[in-house]
Image (cartoon, rainbow, N blue to C red):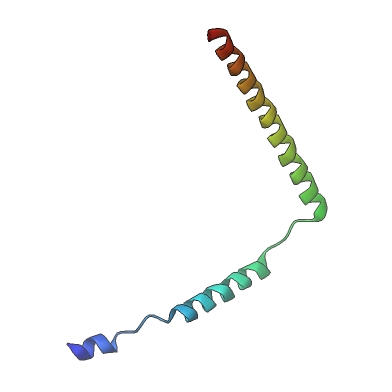
Length: 73
């Protein structure tokens, strides 16, 4: 029974597994196709506009509900 447990493959050490994961990550990053600078600017601008619109909507709802609360109280 003791020989059977020794013959099983042992799990690699934590450092070997971490090193393999880092290698794998860099290997994947080499395959990434990065967007052009113009595309990044356009999408960033679009995200900022959408965030500002939602900010205005949420602020408007907050002010409206605050006014209704003042009317009730």
